[in-house]
Amino acid sequence: MWKKVISEVNPQVEFFPPVTVEQIDWAEEGVSMRLPFSLRSLYLETNGLSNKRDRDFLTWRLELLGERNAQFDEDCVRHIFFFAHAGDEIAFGFPIEKNCAVDRVTVYYPKTGELVHTDLPLAQFMVAYVGGDFEI
Image 1 (cartoon, rainbow, N blue to C red):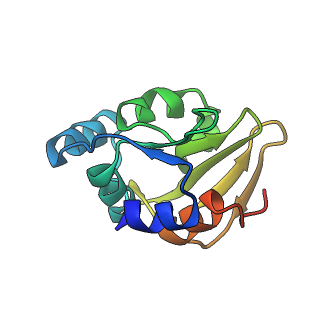
Image 2 (image 1 turned 45 degrees about the vertical axis):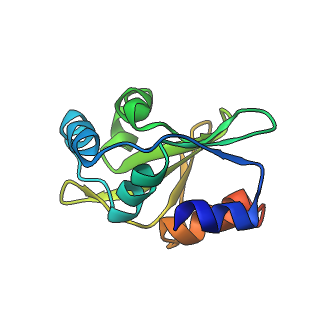
């Protein structure tokens, strides 16, 4: 599903070999967090997305989730689980409820500390983001 939908809105997106359910389970143990079904299904099709033009990752590879989340402000990370960024200015994540990341994308601006809750599930967000229709 992911490859087809994303390729239709942006043919410049590069896909990578998928991960296994066991690798996702291992990553979840490492971050002590249950990932939303949508992010799990994305990783089962592709281990991250990047832009072919500049090789910038649109979503992080599974093995980078723990490392990248550790780079954020401790108070923020307790409430948001991040899965992608747009340069140094913006990060994308999911709100955390009862130790589970919820499938509603949140935008975080590290320089100002501002959080913007979009209410968009990952699928809608990714189509808008990779298609250039999501205003940051």
